[in-house]
Image (tube, rainbow, N blue to C red; front, side, top):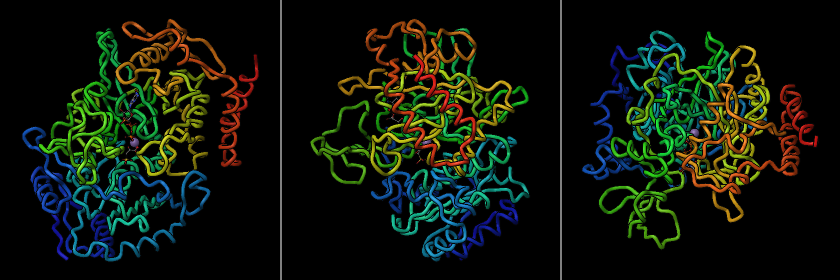
Length: 591
Ligand code: GTP
Ligand code: SPV
Ligand code: MN
């Protein structure tokens, strides 16, 4: 085994851990990644030679490549994702669990010699801005060049991470091997007490880019509880009103439910003078500032976004940013070496190569791009990126949104009474499932705070941690529920969504400043009919009424399903959540 190590690049703790896992996986060689431009070029060429990347039309899409993943490896696999705490109860009823010793044992067998004939890349990476006291370092080893090139876009990779780490051994240890990509031998295991992640058998997104869901959510949520902060599946956006004031908002929506789109929204023509500044589109780390407010940073450096549905009408900013230096995963390719997907600006091509590499024609009856196809692109390519997106202190948050896909029941927007009620609302969040994870699509499931697949410890303790934030934050943000996805009797979305969502944000901003008209209902404050800015919006009064309807009967039925969900947590359920459940039941009963 040969190792290329720039001596200045590593410290003793990093070195000895990488040596240890190399002994287990037995790669032919170990290559340290420094994050340089040279290295990107070299690895890209190697990936093209091996077929992991297919060059796209470099005239039309400079620096863009297509990756086709194994057809069995196209989304997160939640049933193969484990939180391996010493006690099962500490992982809680919503996480899969294996005892740490058993998991290490089982996975060691799969890793044993899994990199024979391959190169092991050692990838130091930083989540958060260099030098920020909130940033965290990870070291991922992997046998996938695709993963390295994605990590390079999604994190601050290489030298910068080791410089931040210095001589410390405080880093997340992330071992990743594709092995044989078999679902039978696929495990994504987290050992929060060891600050360690072991992922094997998948090369896809959230399973394999260990800085993202594994570190920045599962491990970070665990660390956040110990250190007094929150790691959340949230977008961060700054909204500038015509008078120049910028209000920062965070939003937790489950996977493929609109975070990326909201984070880089383009204001409708009729809302002149409004501007949107993107800070983050998937993950937020939130801390209490000296001023008693919550401050958020985006720990990532790039976007790993859903491709289908992306067009200049729905998301002009994303459409523009993915014209160069982008890795496309599982989209369709046109004969001229450009790309296409369902919901693209262009009509379906007469013929194309589908996401699996098979010939495709529009009459095929199957999508050309995988519904969970993705783009990977550096955040700095977003023309709406906020000047504060790398601010080491983050941005102050005035409102938190909980969103999700609900065909019925849930109004377009409403406001919670206070932080405890908002925490309860987050805890009861439910949404229709999407293609971002394997399994059935369109089934309503409880997804508390959009963190069901990402919370690294017992969810009841997590709610307790949320409740405790209000004790430390004297000026917590207001909390709102939004739902862009309510449908009419014919199954059509009632709300136009996308850029028009800014109308809802306008009301939210007004409310967070103590203005904006609202009426009290059992579920929270709803905008009065005139409070929503409808200037230039084509929508009938009847449709608007449907969007804001609160059907008490259905809400009462929903109480039962909430109670059943909470029962799973037994005595660990915080009193504040119980109180809110009882209070909601009471309000719904009252005439
Ligand atoms: P993850 O990256 O999986 O965490 O997803 P995300 O929450 O960032 O979702 P994203 O913004 O990528 O949206 C997913 C899908 O929802 C895309 O196909 C979008 O076109 C669609 N979408 C986003 N916003 C809206 C909206 O306001 N209305 C409607 N109807 N669809 C939307
Ligand atoms: C999600 O599923 O919420 C994503 C994509 O953001 S992945 O990185 O695959 O988790
Ligand atoms: Mn996500």
